[in-house]
Length: 445
Ligand code: CTP
Image (cartoon, rainbow, N blue to C red; front, side):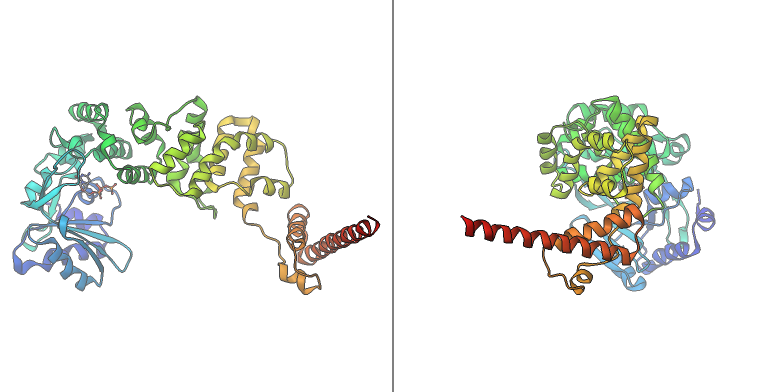
């Protein structure tokens, strides 16, 4: 089958040109060059994917060097794996590899590789839908190479492994199977499902390093809607292998997870930035003990800032209770300022899942995240000092008061300064009065 026409039809012209340039780059060597893997799958599915995955029956790193000069791209190569990555000036990347066979010394080990034919390279891959290649060399441009039956599986929506040891060689494929199943609404073919369940039951996921698991979790959380992926992982009993602290201890957590996506949609246009992989761990850690949370963070080298975010989970019910009543903007800010953004987004998801009873909490959390979190007084400490107040701790108190009138009364800059100066003078007077009293007392004493 020739997909040349599809390439011209479905891809932007700059990408077609790029593919042709790559195919022609080593014409003199007579090597077969292909685009392969997820790129081919997505082209056939009509899904946008501009990240080329190239394999060459020759020397991948040599091809990468030639292309890096042609494209003015930055190159990083991994001799050991016979691969290279080109970082293009337009921000896209091209993965380039020598066609290769893989040998796994033991389950979950990183593979040892040796050069092979394009066909052999396809057989070492994870699933048939990811094991198709398109020849892009001049004479055979557009020819589909599909030795594993990827096209029929793509048409019937099936995730199928290519051999019985696939999940044992590389247990990250268990995560990948779930990811592709949910992303494309495909099914895991029955024998593949048997092998996948066996791999999970045998504890194959425990052989993966924390770094590799974390990487898979991050990829799942980069999907459009990670919720079905997470529920599927729970159904397949995968979560406990990531960590024993991850589970749905109550229906409340499930409902909160399903509300996260709507919160994300609501926040999409705003300036609230957060880390998704962290946010989607929240419902699974809600109700876990602090010891469990600390252990998980140590295991996955999660920073202390993120650890703090998880530890705040146990405080969120109190936050939700307090924000059910209308608070002044400054009180709201004072209450929420110490919380991490992801924790507050999760609190908002909880408020939504609680329904009408938490309508006020929902509104206030949203207002805080979108607006009040970033509010500062329109004056600075130097404005106060410039008006004759000496530097000292009262400057902070004065700025707090300026912000309070700004938020609660909509005070302009002039009024904020007046309030700040009044506060600072009062604090100073009290201090002086206090020290005079101390002097008198010590005299009297
Ligand atoms: N691959 C594999 N086994 C893995 C990882 C990757 O066989 N454990 C192969 C697949 O052929 C895959 C290709 O390497 O298509 C590229 O890997 P990657 O970029 O991780 O996957 P994509 O299929 O491009 O997935 P995504 O669409 O999520 O980027």
